Image (tube, rainbow, N blue to C red):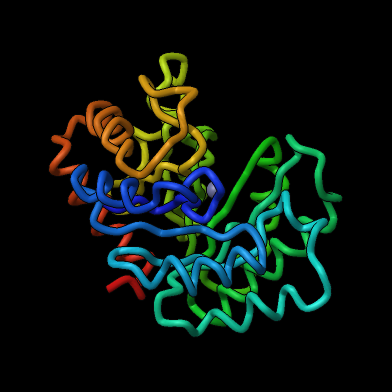
Length: 256
Ligand SMILES: [Zn+2]
């Protein structure tokens, strides 16, 4: 399996990263995309994480960190996009749940990532929280300019929104929330996504799947999410793992 979204550079993994990666490997995780939240995080991931076996980088500025951006930070991200182990841009997107960054600033940076993706061909990774209409409007606008390549990460919207994202050219990724008892809506959406567009992720250290809720999440826990999604899609876990890994390698084409 491929964990298409994790934050291994966070403090939660400072003391036991080697053990975390060993457990991921034993659980069948063959590759991981380590997703940045800002310029320093992007540089750190490229230099110190995406140099290890199976680890790849996404570089960018998370919407909830845009108010912390210093002059020159965007240029620091731009300077990394040609690094061979950089497979994506992000995470980007919009967030109305937390009130950290002014919304127009979030929109400015989301727009930069979308344009950069269209210039470079690198896929973007979208964070969407409590602002579906705003995100969809910007994606529709961007689609007017040209083709889109990217993923809606930790997706929680309706099957209809998923279908529109697929029409726009995007992949849909599901995280641990899909395993929660009350998440029938998310599982209904997950059942509706075409075979060639579905991905899985952990969003470690966040969003631990059932029955590990409340604990630090780590890539090895992806097996719980994979089992829940395979069941709702009526395929074997092996089949689902194969399918989602092939999808991840198609989207993150620089992953070798
Ligand atoms: Zn994330």
